[in-house]
Length: 339
Image (tube, rainbow, N blue to C red; front, side, top):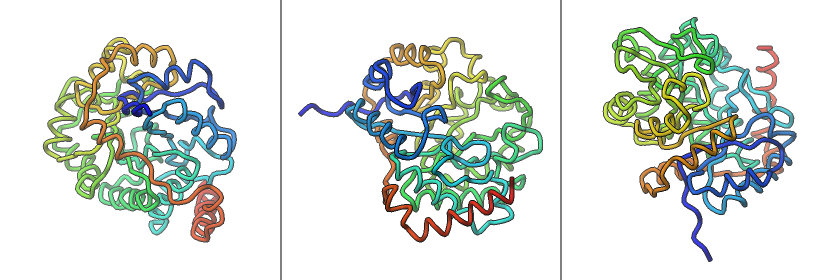
């Protein structure tokens, strides 16, 4: 029997609800290590579970399956899943933050998804519309408590957490999907406010972090996700984070400063990103897969394998579970109140 293909450093996506020959070719590339799913890939729970099974079969080795399912404006799977409220709503229902994290993770794990890019650890400074109600709070202490509870629920279900967007995206007006935001604040202000949720959750074993496509000139002229200072010096050394670093999507405008897609990928990897996301641009993903050298990295592979989900129930068992039934009803009611 052939050895499985090692987990690679690139996260890609697929076009539709079934796999094409082109998708299978990219999935079998040695540099592929993960796949992110979007609303366009989803019809209903059975369909997405079947698609994930086909994706894993095409890879013939360990592969992370991810989705953005934080709730509110950012929930890719809706029909057949509990509708989750925006994170800001947990301020009024703090007792439900841990249970919502469990519910979100349990529902995804039951169909074969390993991780959701959550929780959002950005502080709402009343400036960033792209963050806004995705933040747990404008208060750093409260945001830390609620996000920590949400993460605990995810862990209880068997899912690792990814805190984003380090060191904080909440104090810039520009949307990094469309522009390169610049946060002109002093490092001391960023450290004392925005970094605190990351610091506290890292101390509690946070498994993954996604840096922001934001420039903080007080520290570096490169965005955090491309910065040795931010990732290796501040995140790894000062904050002692030893988990997985996921780049934000290299297709975003906030990454364009680095040049073409291959240049962006090289810079992100050199800065210290373990997994590099190239989404919604199949040709760019193909370019990056072919451009990055194929090499083994035992530490990176160890970090990435630690992000694989540990499902406790399948979809049928979950829906019959009284805990799921109770929490789903509570969260649905909470979401309806916030609509």
